[in-house]
Image (cartoon, rainbow, N blue to C red; front, side, top):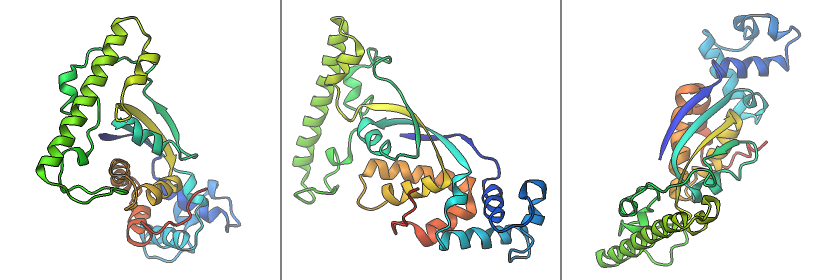
Length: 247
């Protein structure tokens, strides 16, 4: 999986602060400088004032101002299983690569065994991997080799069958029914800062599946550079606490 920043609000924390100060300002924030807007906030510098205000908002559950800045990511090679989980979030916008209009007729089924086109979960190849709801713990090398062989045989056969159906004239939208839920797709997703923190609450948690956890951590890494004060506070004070951030 690869996550790329496509587009984001410039100066997101300036926007958050202006929106928040608007609620308590007699003057119109749209007609004044940030220095004037933040004049009564504690801090020697404008960055200190931002830290004060943003920390106060997050600590007191005033999440509305965090809905204004928007960010858009492009995600490459996510499984349809993971895609089904992330697209459950109502206030995120998605565009997902269509398997009705995009066919995978040029993929070598032998390459699928090594991770081309289909995500191979770590439990298929790592004897030490223990997932949620797993009935047993770690397994021996012989067991994991058997798992890997069954898994790889199955996905290779599925892709071969898919391509044979295409050769027989079946439309891609119908032939895709034989493909595994681990089939990779690309997607574009947009959300605001508040929603990103809520997604992180739900999907970076220890009980989330490994793939969506990894996706969410990649999103947070990008967000930490884009909106540093907010996500530094989130990482230190709020992450994994189910903060009831859902709009």
